[in-house]
Image 1: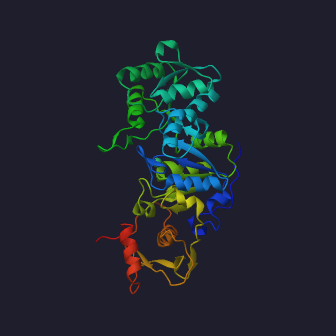
Image 2: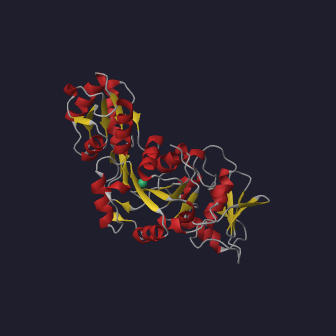
Length: 365
Ligand SMILES: [Mg+2]
């Protein structure tokens, strides 16, 4: 299947029209984008309603394989983001598609993980078993709170017997109020440590996940929306799709600034309201990179200077134009990941640049 890409450029070129006018489908990561744990991101429901009102369709995409699409859709609907199971794409479904394509209809597969894993396998026309003695040709392993020694041992025996080990994702950790806890990657690591075999991985950032999203939504010009650089943004890049990074989840401006090329998004916004806003371009003026009246430049010693905003310059009202200028100024000089030595307000630039840098936590003090 081919995906057509619109003329959406790197961050430098922005998007003169709001993404809703350019893309037919937004492929939304969930945790850190639509909700954080059980609660909605403030304003997300209203912003997504506004996006839908323009005719944009929404796909809800999660690496979390434990819940079924029905459960995810119910959670979203409770948060005032109406969703049906068909709108939800999970890494279990991507894994099941990969297994079905490889082994065909009715193939016998050992499911390891929460209910979402077995449900996705059945929906893909596969036969689900829970014992290695049933002769599975593959093991699909996804996150599940109840996964323990018994299931892991079945997976080990099956893989040693020749079954292909497929992991829905390899995130080593999951966030919790008590700090990070073991994620699917940690439990997949238990199986591969015993078998000595590396699993096939199908969740973000693997292109299999994006292919599943496109297959399920029929998107022609999708925009990937996410809060993580190493799953959402990298997954979009590997699939050749543009991405919008939102700051409502785990990524902070300093991490974005230091990102390598594979982790640099096309657009940035505080939250999903960025779908309905235009994103100004960042243009070069002499040694400066300029965006919406903000001006960023290298200090010649590995650091960055920010000045602005110029009175009267047209920019966005989201307060991120200075950060856009800083990112492009830094990335233009760095082909690999690298944090700037320092980021400071330019001499004589007034209070606003210093205040913006403090807001983004790019300066000390
Ligand atoms: Mg996320």
